[in-house]
Length: 120
Image 1: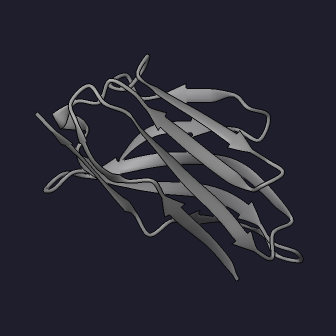
Image 2 (image 1 turned 90 degrees about the vertical axis):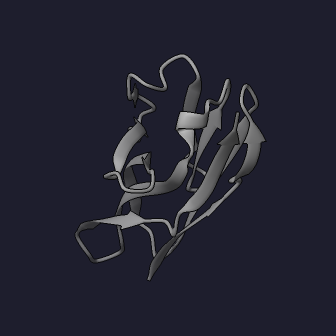
């Protein structure tokens, strides 16, 4: 059984910062790509940022220069540092990881989601 547990969401004023964390636990042999997605009310879930096992990153244009994704492979954890937050960043943020368990193929796993609200 593999789980992704997120933390760090909350309410912040525009221009402020938040740091999201997502820790993977369970029977894990290897974690491949990790990332963050977000879904605002009435909208589809969109990618925010991704990071490979080797540390290569990719960002959505809307967050480039404001958000930073990182990971600690020893802790099976991915982070999202969000700076200069805007009201339009308000959404439920979901972490994602492609994880191979022992004796199993790789599957995509999702966290439960954490609410980020940015007030104007």
